[in-house]
Length: 62
Image 1 (cartoon, one colour):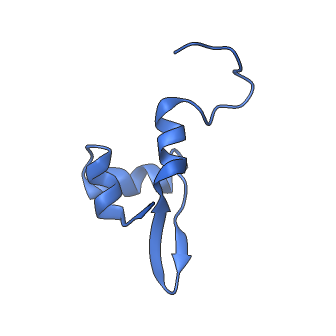
Image 2 (cartoon, rainbow, N blue to C red):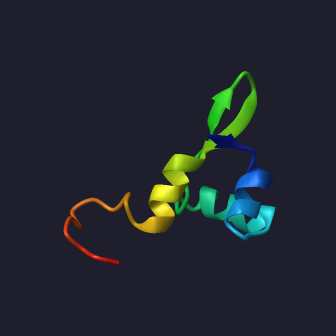
């Protein structure tokens, strides 16, 4: 599932500005460009939020 910056921000309970700030600082990934539209892969964002994206932390039980 792909989402716009506004939709992704809402799903993360953030303002659009907060979301884009975290993208700019590298906390969240940059978007995909699909025909000039910027969209975020929500599966990737979910992995970041849940900790699944952290490498080298196998076996850690959050």
